[in-house]
Image (cartoon, rainbow, N blue to C red; front, side, top):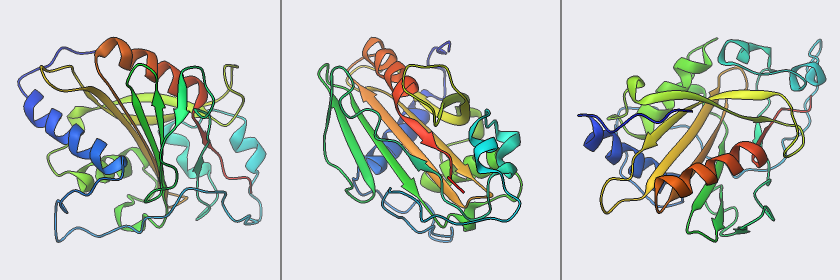
Length: 227
């Protein structure tokens, strides 16, 4: 995906990205809006099987999940993240299940953090995963505007390094401003499921970030609910 050059809004966007990356890495940040609803955080882990009458989980898992297809998920059954970066070439596990986040370190200095949250109903825009995800970014930091976000995809289940279905996400990107790390944060709030995923990647420079993002795209999968 082409990278835009930093524009006039770069300082605000960089600040938003760094705040979001800190949150995903398990650091504390100030609550951005005291009046905003507060979703419940939960450690990532296998979802408790839930049978949804008339729902074909295998069919949903077998095809791409663009934002427009979010309503095909089972109601209230959380989406999860894989542990696909564990053991990937150059990557080693860092802190695991700290405030619900798991970290992965790369030999070139990159850091990836993956997190799942459930009970995200206060932020849900019914029937609209894209608007719900924009609301999620805004909840994390009110300075994050929808115009800062771009679409990308992650694996939707499947096997690493093999062709398979993809799931659309929104990404907040940052450049390599002098003295700062290049970074990108992925997120999607699944309105029908009431859960969200966050993946934050930061690296010493843009070249390292591009390589790390390729690893994330190939190996770190969003896991469809199994029922």
